[in-house]
Image 1: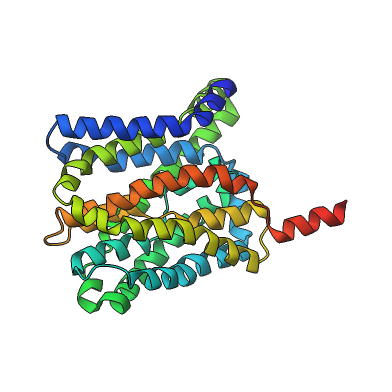
Image 2 (image 1 turned 180 degrees about the horizontal axis):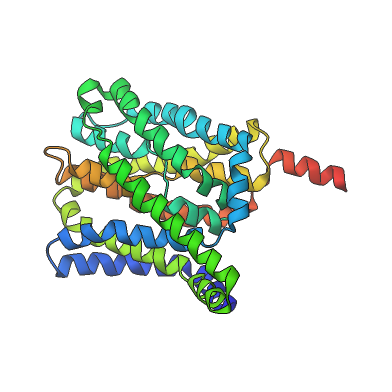
Length: 328
């Protein structure tokens, strides 16, 4: 099984691009997106479940004691990144709905597939796993504040708590509970161990499934607002370049070890598009502009993540390097 898993991870980029292409073709051939929209949350839950299985429970529990990491994560996502987004917002078009969509997605740190990409990029995924409830709660509280500062009180009032609560239940609590039960089963009997090992093959296929479902759901809507999507792509590209650099600097300032610093960099550069999408769809007059603007960010981010998972493993923090030099 390990050899199969190695092959999947080696060719993950090809698998993801194939999923995106197939989803786009499917969306164009089969009109109607409601069924695909309904499948987004279950697909995400499956992806998070198999991701949680990759991290031993003792390691997950130990992540809560990493106060320096949690501080760096909060400063990155709720101080440094909002400052970057605020600076980039000056280059946004004047369209209020378009600006709302861009700021909504860029101000919300990812709580789901960032764990998968961090694991693939040799970052400490267990730390991100442990921090997901905190990240979700913080963005629920701070998003209206940031949107109010950057857009005005009317825009802030459009942010509702419901989608975030639903995301916490179905994307964090339920998959994590199932992962705990599966790991406990695997520790008690041989059958459970075999099932657990088999599920270890699924992170890449599950991520491909999520991409397929999301793209299939939104491509028809993007077709009606492709001009709006193209107008914000340069902003997303600039964010994709600058955010991981800024996050890495913050991690260095907190003197994190290499794998923890990589986790902060992944978190700072990966946004919560899949969770804020239902929130955006609930905004009056959202379709087709908001879905197009948000999924455009997802596509830019996907390309960026494929670069991150190749580049991040080459990064070494200054504190880890100093410790290595001292040991020698």
